[in-house]
Image (cartoon, protein in one colour):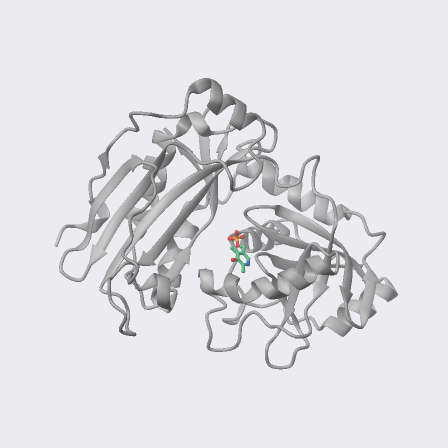
Length: 365
Ligand SMILES: *Cc1c(COP(=O)(O)O)cnc(C)c1O
């Protein structure tokens, strides 16, 4: 078998790229997740050859056999990370090695082939190089990268697939929230949970999202922005939102977030905020936080701020919490001081505008 860490990429440039004028028009207001670049990355795996056939090729629809096992048993994982345009016209990636590691961990949990981290990183770099012109220069803009892997064996038997297709697509994105981050209202789901002990809560898999969509739809129906899930065992402890981790800021200046225990997605933004807070000398606790405690602390003023965090929206203040039997405001309902400071600090590092003591930022040549 080839040394997969050094698998060469075949580069097939797109012969019919989007015209420069059209691309610039799209980049002026890309929104999120609807505009795509000219290329994509692909690598295949099967039991005989291992990882092979690495390429950057024109973005195009896939041809799939309807019996491909992902379409039936949902063996699928993904990642999300961003490339940023720097002030001098270069590009940066933020902690792509952490995404590579998590992708391999998700693969292991879903009984899929593990992509070597070096190959994950090279696929990202090669795609950003090919689609460099798609890095938005608008304020708050980024190129959102979506690596994912599907079970591609044509077989209806229930077993781990003998073939996988790994791909990366890229989508220019504007600021997730225009004009900074407004506070969101979250809906506490009584009926649905996201992840149970022993389940797939710590894996970044499409199935976790599929099972959360009904709860998210309920949140929207209740005129809330996001659903917040409680633990599946006691229905008591705050776990996370559908796609973001949660933090609590106390009146003594300390920071708390639910502990990773297999039911919470180990967010890279979460880890980065914990690190920045510890660097700043803040007291940080990774400890369970009960929903009743959240309500009581918000009422007493012991809790000052709450926020959600993840790659897409970075840091988003939570201003209000609602549920069938509760409705409470956090602080004055607007973005808090600590939330705003942590967000600004993280964004500055990501864009290469602040010192990077932990070596999180990779500059692309
Ligand atoms: C991706 C994701 C997050 C955030 O992770 P980041 O690495 O910070 O982007 C949080 N929760 C869920 C369920 C996720 O899928």
